[in-house]
Image (cartoon, rainbow, N blue to C red; front, side):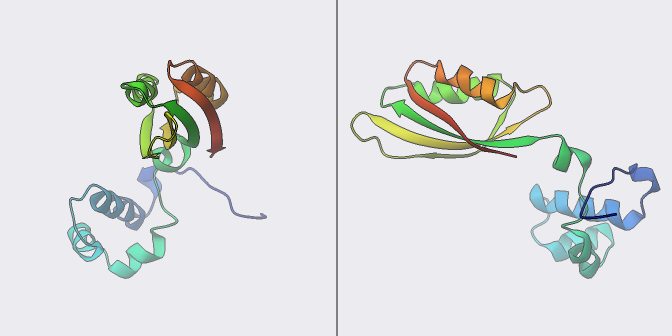
Length: 146
């Protein structure tokens, strides 16, 4: 077998260490534990096991069911334009992961956002077309997609 690939395996047939590593990652991400040492101790695994598998073990949902896109927009410097953009993203069932807005210059500001799509999200190109129809959006582009 050439190259790297992924295999989907039912959790119930995996060695217990893998499910514990996933749980340690969740504990750290949610802030339930402040350090990998504390999270590993809570789950009853060694830190070395966690560090060995942390980049190789993940949930199906975490790795494969979401797409991430980055968008670029130029918005008029008017009240509610950014809010309308964010509301449209929310109404489409997507999650804003990052958002950066420049200081408005000459009545317009640039915005970049990284958005996580879900299984019910529209096609990214259709989504961009939809967002470009919002009143106050001067320009809308898809920068990248995963």
